[in-house]
Length: 387
Image 1 (cartoon, rainbow, N blue to C red):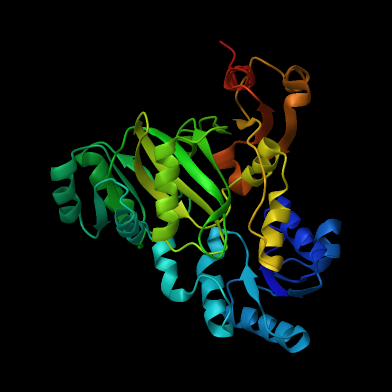
Image 2 (cartoon, rainbow, N blue to C red):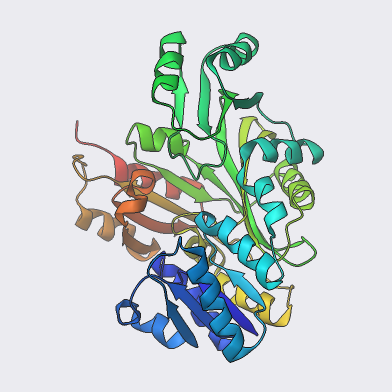
């Protein structure tokens, strides 16, 4: 099986996907703009072949790379990066090389928030009132129905990039004065806890692995207000959340992909859809999958692709939590105290690359406990500031 992986070196822990593919006998064919000698040693040995391009945004260069791989290894079976940034590029390449997976005609549904709303409604899942706005008058018409505050975000944006909360007509005027020349969607502000339905689906859209996470706040607040964030996995999923999550998998026609579907929990077991991401959850969540359930999701993904295996036994034995810290803040506890107090519950301490630090902090502690109370005590211990 010939699998092309775009930017297999980024983020660094995603090299585990390539190594597992190779272990199952696939030809792992990497394309990136990084010199081969600069790749991590473990990734180098996982790649069957590597094609360096000067610019990953130069589509003709990517086509030449796939042409080279096709000539040398035969038909390409899969193209992926597991990264939202390259979704449209992957789809275009699949169209041109007739490869299974998300095609160009399907990309808007999983990238544009306005299109997501339509699919959520098809799934019977409530959504926030909102629409793409092209002028101040359109925005005012919407606000006349919803009231302030409203949230404005790029219709095809990634994460919380260029997302803002507007509280008044003055904020609205300032927003249009600086608005980038891209489509923006404006929605009523929804008060609630952000929760997710995450996992990996097989070719029929059925989850072979799934779980859920609870977030201390939205990424918009984390980025714009430089807050510390923590989020953690559940051991048991609420019935209604799982029901809505499965309905979304069908509505979005998910096939052989990871998924990360976000909801607002506005009251106990009452949910409103936020957005979908047809890729693994961001940050180090794939590692958190593994530590929460004592599994190897990288292997599970590779085995699903290579052999079609779609039955895996697992238990959510732990709540696995990520808690961040930021440089420049004065925390009550030292790093050494955190490591000592967490003990064997500490799974990893990560130094977050700059491109992710606005959302994930500069340092992240990943730990697991069977009981939520113990976990939350450790979150407070890590993030408590000096008075």
